[in-house]
Length: 432
Ligand code: CMC
Image (tube, rainbow, N blue to C red; front, side, top):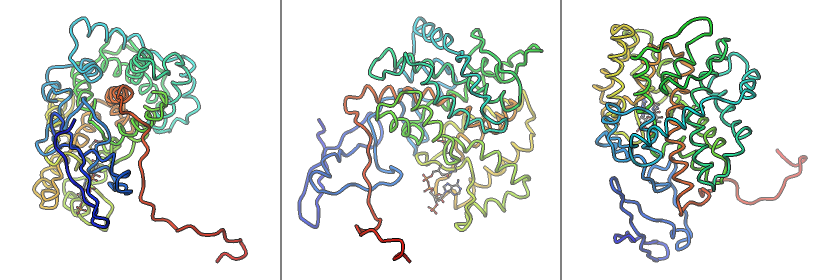
């Protein structure tokens, strides 16, 4: 039980109540306001959840002031340098790094579920060739619940686990098929002897008529990007999944809702928006003009890949991805790539600018990830799909944590109603 409390007084009635404060392992304490409505008859007002903890969680912790990101307590820098994506997936789902035997068991489970039902393959034919792959992802992932009835009983832990494994395993297959559909090439079946990211590269870039060898630099870069994107506590897409899951919706439908939320340019869609922005800026000589546009309140233009709700310092993922960007360009591309030069120039100017400094707007993970994807030959409209593949791990971990939480109830926010007061129906002839 919480020892600390905060006393809140209603100055209209003079009534005071004491609300408990809970302390976490790290980060700010949380005031338990459950009694607030009952005692005062008021709801709390917090658009965008700026001061609201929507749940308890033991998965990921971000210190936005220090620029720190921990998965189950482990700093992201250590995991990105030493771990693999599937090891991180196990950690996020189970809370501990796997032993050798646990790791082998987990890899076996994931690689046994990489294929998708053949009927699901024909689902793609209904999409026009120019459909955005994120639109296809929403549809195909949502439809998984129509195929896997044996894993939709969310109260059954075995069902939950197999649904999680299926989602993590099939996401690259579904993503690669979305890409192949858009370029009119045959789908490539998964190869279970390849790594998670190697298999994805093979499914995206190999063709039946030629041999394809996965490039180890590309494979490692993708694996690291996936580690960096695997979870990010209660962001918009994860909160969407928790909200959808709170009604006991099946996991496939929940993950599809997360994919839809991720697509927006303020969230996962930012990586694609960064590349469009760099294309629009075009040349270093135009940077000043676009910085001015970003600062102009009458202009809707924002510097995509800059700013974050929580990070008020460098996004640690951006620091790691920036280094990887240099490495990938040196080995697979051109370190003098004009796009990268433009990005570095934009970054340097923005970091020196008072507008960005005062608001603590730093480059976020999406600022550089697109440049790496581009060097790897991944088209711009697949960038957010890459993010979705990686984040599926965080989504399923958070979804499983939510289902297992004894405090879990259907999420049902309140509102401050400011619409018309009750009034009588007006006949058409009397309306003006
Ligand atoms: N360019 C110009 N001004 C900005 C930007 C930007 N990218 N981001 C924030 N601001 C300004 C904003 O206008 C506001 O100024 P003022 O105080 O004068 O009104 C101030 O900074 C605070 O911004 P906010 O919109 O209140 O902040 P938020 O926490 O609601 O939004 C954000 C966070 C990430 C949506 C926003 O910074 C943004 O739109 N960034 C660009 C999109 C982007 O890169 N998104 C990826 C986020 S990281 C990946 C992920 O987690 O999905």
